[in-house]
Image (cartoon, rainbow, N blue to C red; front, side, top):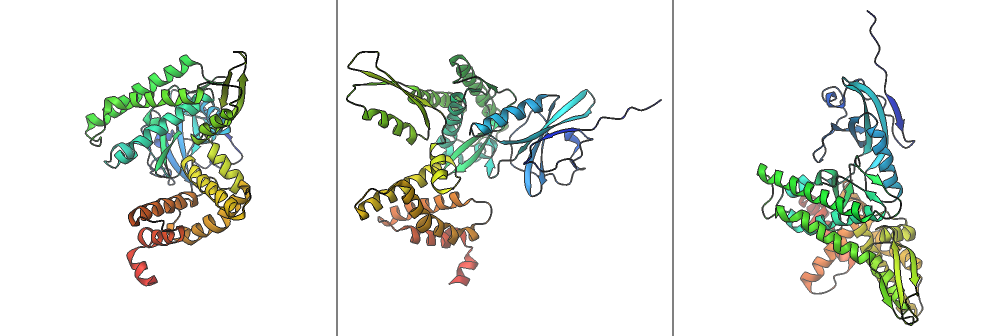
Length: 410
């Protein structure tokens, strides 16, 4: 009897993806351990489908096996999320396989989010309490960003999120988009509310499981977390979507409103003025697009790519430099000139001094923001501004250098 040959894998990879064809595609992903030598153990959440992590050319990629056709669907959704500038993992492509007895399967390949933490790493430690509000706010902010962009997630849960430290706060990233949907324009209210219901049920359930396991850190109010995120979401949503009414002589309130939204990190697209209510009032509506205002502003001025909170802190410093230079020169200094001064005389010298001691686990923007935080700490302790150079040197001696190296440099 003639034996039928098993069809080979079919690859649909992006041009930026490495060559994954030498992986053991003749086996189900769950059977790779013990066969594939490039597998890595990294922090990750729980998964409903087999997920492994492979080191390809020094970079780590997530390999997730799904039923046939689903990997292509999720790959396309993640690509749209990337194109819209939303926080999500970067898709590399998908592969159609024939390794499952029940029929064809598909595999999604995404780039692992460097320097990220799964929720279990955060909720299992007592140190969570200082991150608690930042963690919950990051989930809130991600949901608002997705809904503004017309994305229905359908499965917001702690397991489907990764968190990256961002200047003392946390940035939440979408990892799993199996159930996501795109809707033209802003997401309809019924889909938003249903997404929030799913989020609340999922998060409360996951934390209850950790509590039952006896692994949840003390002081976490399990039954309140989901409701707390929902409340924060509603407040933020109302703030960024509300209309304001002002007198025609108060046109300055347009810029006030835009600046207030920018301060929250949101970019403003269209501004609509409605004067149909009478000659004594103007109704203002603004279209909020995303929460990348400070990131885009910083990158446009300096070329630095940073997380949201890092970019906000550095833009605040550039604005301070602008005010200082304007005062010293007795003329208005352009923001671009202030950014150049900041790069040449402040940011670059600080980073160049410290980065070689910090190692590869920290980015230059993160390192610089840690120096700013250290400067604030020293200034508070000494009740005076200690200065950036002194703070950077103290940070080097106290944080980066091991005691033996400090002795040698002395």
